[in-house]
Length: 352
Image 1 (cartoon, one colour):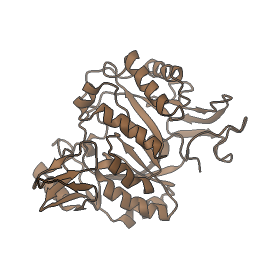
Image 2 (tube, one colour):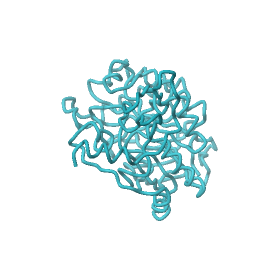
Image 3 (spheres, helix red, strand yellow):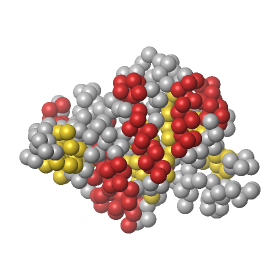
Image 4 (cartoon, one colour):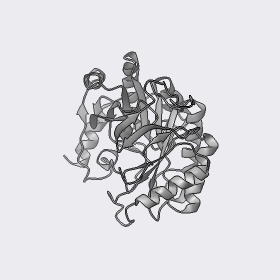
């Protein structure tokens, strides 16, 4: 299947979008992500999956490009339903073009002819049934950028909520007030990739630092449960100055937001930087602690970062959850509903 055939198929798997405003010149402004693309008739937005046809904006609908149950720790959410399974689904497309994307087979499908993932038609009911059959406690929109497919995610989440399932986004954080308001009634968890604190580097990836920072602040004000990930890429975002800026910003929003500092490995089109080491992650953790963050986790190097995968009480230091990669070895929060079993301190998160 060539690129043109795929574009045709994806354009059929759509419905009219909710996240749109009409402009005075006939263009339609998409509100699904921070680009806020003003889209002329017959054209698509930056994401290439939301497009203007005959005076209407159309958004992806009725398919998945990935569907499986994962440990919720893989998302990663460390302060939500530890040890549970999450039904993970994704579509195609992204509003960024990160050269180190580990999900490029879905996110960059319409930009890169080497990406071979194709859509599979599926109903809302089939997705929910798959999650319940696997014993999942949550449903997570991931694999591509969920903001640009929010109409589909919200439809799934509405059904998930009827079954008392937790819902979440794994996102680049390139949001708008409109899309956050749209998903908020149906979305509990939100993971943001804070990729760098350098706007020039953000623009190389296709985004804007300020929009991501604003989104994080809005998510916190709106009471989403937030966890933030920074992939530590040597030579790109790992300077002392930049890591301190990231840590201080997160602490200024809330010291209770978990910060995951994760290891880069050479992938997709970024082959020049060396892989991240355990020492790199340990240095980032120390910077986070110095900034006052209470929960900092080292990722992608299981077993190599000492206690960096575990959750400890921020008041008394008691071990609460011991992890190895995505596996829970000990969990003392299940019966205590989020309180330290030693001192009774409330540990922020979504534990039950």
